[in-house]
Amino acid sequence: MSDAPDPHSRAGLEARYGKNYRWWVLLTVMVGTMASIMASTIINVAVPDISRVFHLGQERAQWLSAGFMAAMTWSMLTTPWLLARFGYRRTYVGVVLVLLAGGLIGGSSPWFWLVLAMRVVEGLAAGVLQPIPAIIVMRAFESHERGRAMGIFGFGVVLAPALGPSVGGVLVEWFGWRSIFFVVVPFCIAAVGLARRFLPMHGPGDAAPARGGAPLDWRGLALIGVVLLALLNGMVELHGQDKRVGWALLALSVAALIGFVVYQRRAKRPLMELRLFEHRAFAMGSVVAFIYGMGLFGSTYLVPVFMQLALHLPPSQAGAVLLPAGFVLAGTIPLASRYVDRIPVSRIVATGLLLLAASFLLMLTVGPATSLLWITLWAIVGRIGLGCVLPSLNLGAMRGLPDPFIPYGASTINFMRQLGGAVGISLVGIVLEWRLQAHAGDPVRGFHETFVLIGVLTGAAVIAALRMGGGAPPPPTKIVSP
Image (tube, rainbow, N blue to C red; front, top):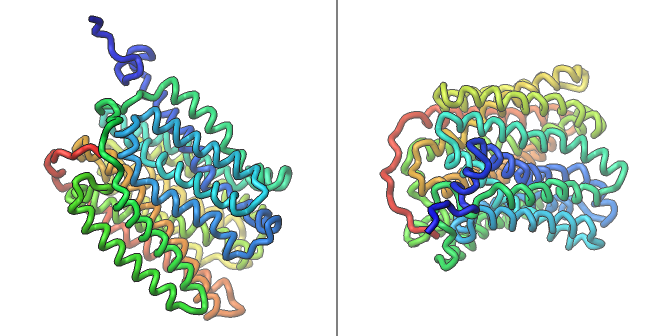
């Protein structure tokens, strides 16, 4: 009997490709994640064109982004079960093909309802993809290499949202809104090719996929779906005339959340492993992820709107102003990642949050007569802060977790950030509308007060970031595989 390892296992692939094989795995998951991020961000530049073609009002057009975000947040919690049930290669290839189908069908659709449905399909695929890179880094790389690995991964991934608006604007102008959907096609094809060659059938340190394993926790997934839909729709309804509907939906969201927590504590195979929160670093990291998501996603909505509505800049010029900050972010991540394994992660994350908060508060100095150079500089300050947070937060929150907790930790921390983003966008919209009405005729003041809100919220996350350091990890409790 031969003792040669399975050629599709990590050991077999490492024997074939050598010690640097893990970097090929990182490249593989990076390409797929870039496709999902590109799909999530580039659509915004095409919304006016899509609205004109399908005769949409703002209340329907906004679901092109909101539907994607809700689907992505919801599906993130299924990643551990999918990996355990189908293995790394099948799961990754499967969701990339789903993302590819969403782009092809959405870009070819003659009906808005099908375009919107494909945005939801793309969001479902993107949600499963998002936690996988952190799992790979935590399991395939030694502790002293993880900061560098996350830095390289982050450098590639942030190029997608940094270049997306500029590339998307050119594509819409030259080829129309359908070209936006087709952008993911080459990324997906490359990701599938790489995955079939480099991804193991099962993950580093994992048993073979449990094809006869336990079913997915559909009850938990249904409850968290109610939480998300009621929350997002409730926040939207607060914009309307009858705010009672909004408050009723928010109450339903809270009730469903309580039901979800109670059910997960009793479930034998929970969707979300709540014992993760016994680890102080993870609990504080989750708080940071939620607040950081609020500030990050809220600001990505607020800053472009501020430059167009208050400063009266055209969309192309607004995108050009933010482009240097995107390149600075891409350069900051690998630089900051060098210190992740040398300096306490809590300090790096806290520093990044302070810089991000400062960039929001510095926008109070910006008015119609302000030079564009200053706007660019304040945006760069914020992107330097993001560059400090991005490679550090996941590693700091999950460092010290027992190995069976890692897939749950990666999906949960991404879920918290995305949930914060959904709340942040709606909160910013509500506060901005309120302050613009209060300062009719002076929109700059209304925007300034909204920037204060985001700055204070982001600054408050520093308290949780500083508490990430220290604290013993929970004992290596046995987790029943989903």
